Length: 380
Image (cartoon, rainbow, N blue to C red; front, side, top):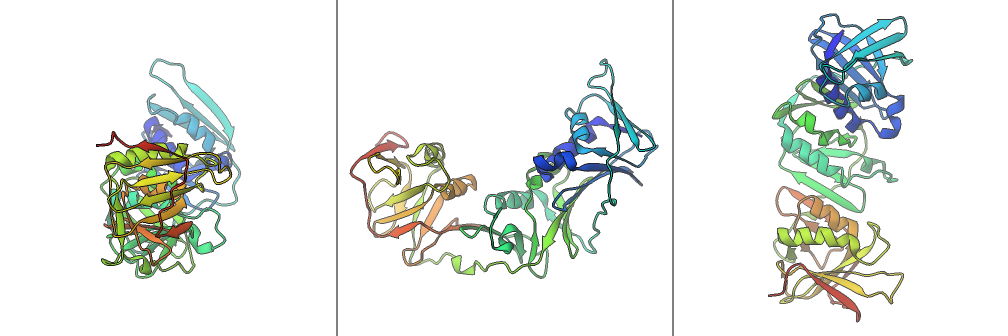
């Protein structure tokens, strides 16, 4: 069996997004004869599946299994021509070259033992969706989904009608404007595979389908299936923005870049849970203040957003986790809307809403006596 090394390189890079690094040593890659050539298949520890169908140049496809770490070694570079596979008993031999004139590398390994072959789910119905739009939304959802929440439903990404939802109980991302893929809520495990540049390059659209236990995606030669769950996902309808009763802060792109750079150096423990405060007042330069709650002698630092604007009748101070502002900026959200009557506020006015609860909410502006002011640009 002979395969182009560039195909193994592409498969390895996509697979690394699906498999956690600590689990790669225990993962086997199956090479299976296919009507189009060879199909590489693997199953992650969580039960997610990936297949990649490629031509067999030698027209002699064979069934074998190799440790994923060896696939990583072979696919470290996409140059070097072809890879030759041979099988004898429970041993597999692989030979490839790093360059045309370099000596060949040969590896002989015992094929990993398995209980059963992974079987790719086959949805009864597929729906086509623009791939970049969908993958961007699912990659953004990774910033908000729970990794260790006691609420079982929050470890999933939820497809609800034309929306994609993600939450960890402290924050929620609601993205709208997608094709209706399922009649009822459908939950799937989050995965970094949506961030794969190689996978996105195959086609401008992706096929989406589902079975009872999996949510499936197919684009070009790649099919991956993420485990699906059954749980009641929270309702976020109450977080819709009303025209009245809201004040908002609009941060320019230049100030957003300044804020992203300086948030991490504000006083505190240096964690995402450090409290930072929006200090907003009509007619004044908007500011975001940080200080060390464990050391009151340390001066506070105010990041003054010279180019940004606050619209509202009354002064407002809202203290939030630093990580929530960083997530908003990472999502490209620069407009923050506040509702004084509600202990949560909404970010974003288009097809996405990013919601998170403040640590402290007050209509009174509180400025510490000792503070250092840092301006986003020279004062006018």
